[in-house]
Structures are given as C-alpha cells and as structure tokens.
Image (cartoon, rainbow, N blue to C red; front, top):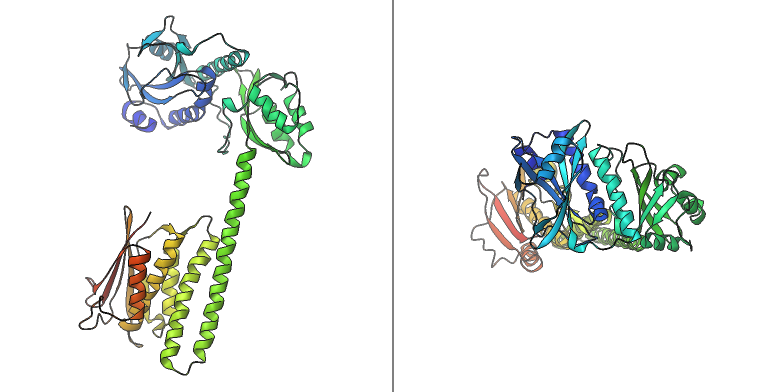
Length: 490
C-alpha cells in the first residue's frame, strides 16, 4: 500500500511544507475520529484536478466503522462525491443532506477543507455510521461539540498546532479521560473516566465548576508537581502540550488542545490518562535491567580474577607446554570476559559484536609472539547479536585468530588476518582468512586432535547450530588458511 508521501509525490502538487502539515494532522486525528464517532479519510487533490487520492484513513475506537474496507491509496473521480469537491473549491465545511448506503449501512459524509495558510491543500472526509446513532448522552454531546470546534479549526488553518509536540509514547486518548474547560480553565464537563482519574488523586466530588489547575495543586504535593508554568499551561488549556503529574502513589498524563474555532481561544480539551501501572512496570524493568547489568559486571570481574590467577600460575610453570596451555586458557577466559563487559554496558541483552571483534583482534595479537607484525582487519559489519550467541561466537573467533597467529606466522614474519562479515537474512557468515603458511599437508578437520579446533567445532555445531569449514585461502591471498562460519541468527 503506498504511503501518504508516495501518493503525494506521484499524484499531487503538494510541497514539503504541505506534507509536514498533513503529517501533523494525521498524528492527532485519532482524537477527531473518536470525538466524531466517525471514520476519517484524507483526500489529496490530483495534480491534473481530475479527482482525489485517499492518502490515509482512520477508524474510531468509540463507535462502529462506516468503512469496512481500507480505501487508502484509491482514486476517486472529481464528480463522484460532490461534498469533497465543493469543500475543496469553496474552502468551507460541507455536509450531505441524505446518507449514502454502503454495504447496507447508512453513512453520513461531512467534508472538512484542510487549510494551510491561505490555501486548501486537502479534504478530510468524516464518515459516520448512522446505525450506531442513538439519542446522545451528555458525554456524546460534549464529544460532538468538541469535534465540531476542531473541524472548524482545521477548515480555518488553526489545527494542527505548529507548536512543540510531546514525545510521550503513552499520551492519553479520548476514552481515557475527557475534560472540557472554558477560557478561564474552569471545568464545564468531565467524563466518568476523567472523574475516576481524579478520584485516584484523592478528589471525591465532581470536577464541574472547579479550576482544574487549582484543584490539582491541592491534590499534588509541590515536590511532585511539574513546574508551575507547565501545570498552568496544560491544565488551564492555554497551550498545546502534555505534562506528567505524579503523587507518591499515582501517575497521570494530561494533554491539552486549545480550542479556537473562530480564531480566539474559547477553552480547551484536556485529555487525562492514569499511567500508574505503566510507570510501576517501567520502574520494575529499570530495576531488572540494572540488576542484569550488575551481574554481567561482576561476572566480568570474576573472570578477570580467574585470568589473573591463571597468568600468575603460568609464570611459575617450568614446563613450556603447561605454560602455553595456561596462557591459552587465559585468552579463552578473557574473550568471555569481553562479552560480559560489553553486556554490562548495554541496555538490553544484546551486544554490538563488531566492537567485540575489534577487541578480540587486538587481544590476540598483543599477547602473541608476533606482536604488531600481524594485523587483524575487520571487513563488513556483524551488527547486534544476542548475548548468549555473542559468548560462544567470541570464543570461536578467539580460537580461530589464535590458531592463525600461532601456526600461520613465525616470530619474524609479517602478515594479515582478515575477518569478513557477510550478514544474510536469518544467517550470519563470518570468514577468517590469513596469508600465513597455510594448512599442513594432509590436514583433515574430522580427524584433527587439536584442542582449539575441537573447541571451535563443538561451539559452532552444538552451541550455535552452524557449519564450520576450513580450507586453503582464496584470492587475493596466494597462500594461507580460510575458516568459514555459517550460523543462524535472529
């Protein structure tokens, strides 16, 4: 399905500023759909003025839908729906007298011109399923009155507001709690859900007649309030803004939309949402994440302690083979410690494995006999992998790099080891290739008794569920060894 931007680019003369205006409108039009109990369709005028394209669609959560099918991306000829055409040409709200029948559903269509500055750039069609219409309650009348004010603001180029938008992901919706305040910030109507939110704060009576800002100050301790300017601006309905208000036991988000149907502010719509449970879960998650990071930090410290003890023991070993075995163990423990150190700094149980690859390359060459004579080069990016995958993969890379350094180059030889990452859909291919001496004659992976290769094979095939391959190096290297890993990843 084409996006709003694609449809505008392919079929209309709308510029970047027009599109930005329409995106701000559609970011908030769930409120209008819910207040209107109606489906909304944004119609974009065709470049050739032969009709309109449905750029986007929104269904209400407060009533039955009038559009059973998604019509986004469809074309409507100029003459098919006169109300849309007239609203665009005349720049004012239009309403059809008789309902349309769609799939045995009577639908009333209102057409609202979307004005930006002095131009009408689109039309917002409001489609109401008349089967859901009944004698309206006070709540429904308050909803419809507010929807009418917002519709006039759209037609007058006063909505959406071009001020700062909130970045709160849990911003309230109409059904969470609806409050209408007058120009002075006094409550003229509050929905039952809004009353419930304030009862959680400790208010026992009705909200009607109260100055919402003053009432909230009485219920929320000064140390828990947002700054006074934000509190007054949002709860007084002065600015288009969100604010979070907390007591020791309750958290709520308030959102204000000033109403200016004729240009001058007459009051505001204030939406309220009780987010106490969401904040409690957020705190639990933060506590768990901090605990997990602390565990990884302590595991890293313990592994470094083990590595230091092994290193001390290796220095005291008179036997060269035993000393070499302990030094290999130090490197293996060190590679696991690097993963846990990275996890201790991460916000999730995932790590950037490219950083680990670079650190492993430096670790292996720095502690080897060849020193800076052999360079480890990474080509491509692995990206982010799960922590359990990273631990096994780090050990594999350490062993492969150590084998390449130890068996591929002498103490006076210069060389290069290339670690090449080839990400694929659902899989990861890693190739470690060097220009060293190459494989010994008669080498067979299946019959090899080398401890490092045994560890690599077990980890790749059993832990990672992958495939291991070892062969002679390919071009551009004239000689050397090529180790390939093919493992499944999320």
